Length: 162
Image 1 (cartoon, rainbow, N blue to C red):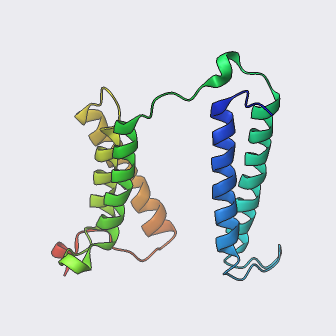
Image 2: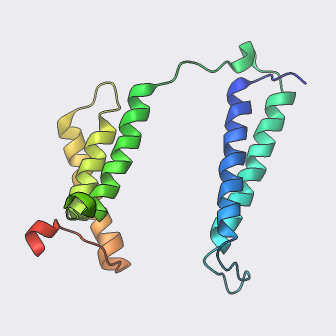
């Protein structure tokens, strides 16, 4: 069988792999039922749906003819690096790095760092636009996670609050 769309084929394989990983990871938690969902219910459901979607996309890539074979282009290393780095920096801001003595920097610093680093992936990013976006996201995150959901994690740097 010949691959007619490389992009769809490898995207489908990636969806299937992530879906199977989520479903497999969910088996270590109690699933529960539809009426009384356990902690593993949603990851299991999400994993199965993602694997099914991946199967459909992969099958389509093998059956439906694509213009020019939908070849995979070059890897966009700059955006990939900045997006991954922004998520890692956000995690460090929320949890700190106790192994080197870095205390948590909090949600607000994390949102600003995440937004600024991720925005650098764009070709023509502007500092002013990024600042406005990060301020808006920080406000919404504070409202949603701290005020409405009442989640317990640091909002401000531990250096200021402790």
